[in-house]
Image (tube, rainbow, N blue to C red; front, side, top):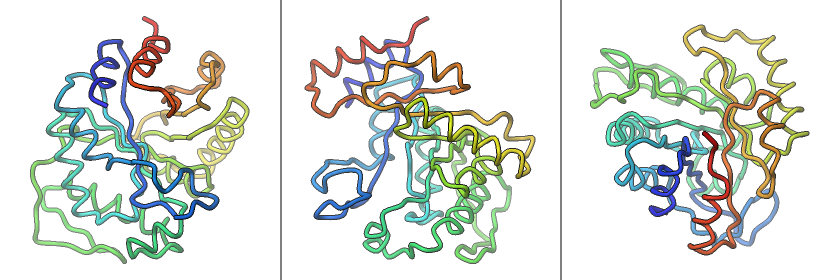
Length: 258
């Protein structure tokens, strides 16, 4: 992992991304994306290790399953990561879709979207207000404070997901939107739905233009097609079958131009 981080930074890659599943259904059943024995490191721990050996490359959570986390504790962890990395964090969030995972961590599955919206608001209150307080259905606090604040005054939030609620959340609350595993045709369909959400929901001026991030299929070589559609960032995923030498060679072959 650290070799990949160092090689990626040296080759000019813009960012490195780490996703999460705290647990996976066993035995694997749809829609679980991976075998339960898949060795998934926690993204905050992973990116903290990467931050220690790099200086420039940005560090993205792709994604953190927000409603499964305690928002006050997570706000501290994310602020700490942004500080130790010198302000390089990109906060990718999603609401999750594996009901057994929610059951294992003791969080209701049905209200995960509403919970995620509130958790994000609560974290942003901790990061950005002089005297943080929040009074919601799931989170309440006052008379507290939490330092250090993130280095980035407005920590970039990138909303993952391809549901109407995810598109609405990206428009209203996100600096960007993230679509995972999308080919060119699927990307076009999702971007059309995202534009529909932009027509329906009000976007705060402070968020600026909505940045589009897509992970294409593993063997995709259609970068120019994604760019022509308005995709700002491609997050490439190598095959899990590559050994150490082959993985570094894959990084060389896919390095950004210019």
